[in-house]
Image (tube, rainbow, N blue to C red; front, side):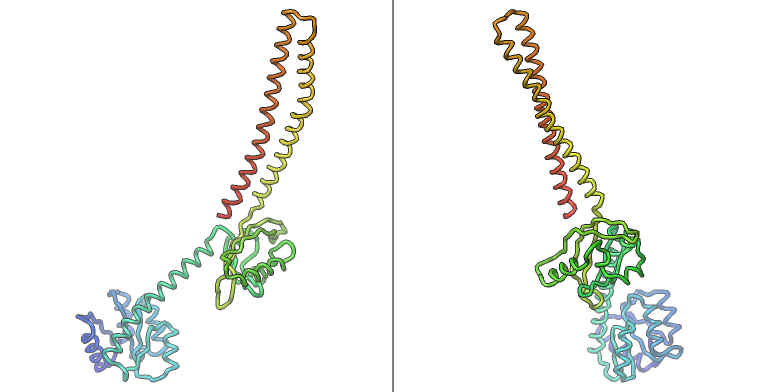
Amino acid sequence: MEDNPGDFALAEDFLEEQFKNPKIFHAWSFNEAKKMLIEGHGLDLVLLDLSLPDKQGIDLIIQINVLCGKTPVVVLTGFADISFGIKSLSLGATDYILKDDLTPLILYKSIIYSIERKRNILALKDSEQKYSELFHLSPLPMFVFDAVNLNILNANKAAMQHYGYTKHEFLQMFISDLRAGNGNTLSGKISDFLRNTNYTSLPSISRHKKKSGEIIHVEIQGNNIPYQGRNAMVIMTIDITERLNYIQAIERQNEKLREISWIQSHMVRAPLARLMGLVSLIRNSQDNCAEKEIMINYLEDSANELDNVIRDITAKTDVSVNINAYRLFNSKHSVDA
């Protein structure tokens, strides 16, 4: 993009000297360049003069960068103003070259470096965008907070939905404000975490309080990250309230099963023992006949059968307790994984 025929011819010669058969498009004005950029020509780079007939300076850089999108822009200018050169880079230009300093080698290096720099910038933005989406679109509540003063710096949609606070309300809070109890405990854990570089996460279980006043139990996983120039923490909270309630229900059920087992092994077995003792007495009495022997055998078989049933039920209640303990163990470790 150059309105000076001499400067364009010089740049064209330098390009043809350094690149094999370069495909060059020339625009004399901003409007002409705008039309080319909108039509699209698969451009690798734009060389921009800052003094076009219909647009100049900062406004020109801004407009061209909008039109170029992912295409790098190298500014070529006759103005030896370092501050303006820095300003142009902050506005999106990938390089700033004075025309008086232009040589084939300098132009070649600038083009190659600018293309690579733009590729890296776009890759970084794409990576940041993906991480931002992972944070904001996570189905679990996530927070970023200052690791020094515990100010909440960011919260995702799931956090707002689960806790009931708006984004603005979260940003006015400390992360310790979420705790249903003493927030100093969390502060102490974070200090320990930051001092110990061997830690890679911050697993813990805590009681949190929603905006509605509801108390929930959460499992916390977190890491230390840099955020907007601050030493920060990102944490994810997993609401385990229902799981804990389920565990408590299982424990109450197991307690009842233990009571049943005790009743079976003591209260039911006592008359059974007396019954079996009577069988022994009757069998050993002198009044012995075939009919009495048959009755004794029936009585003994029934007592043994009842004894086996009690033993089987007792064994099953013990297995139930063990199975529930096993399920509890697996549930805890599956969440940790």
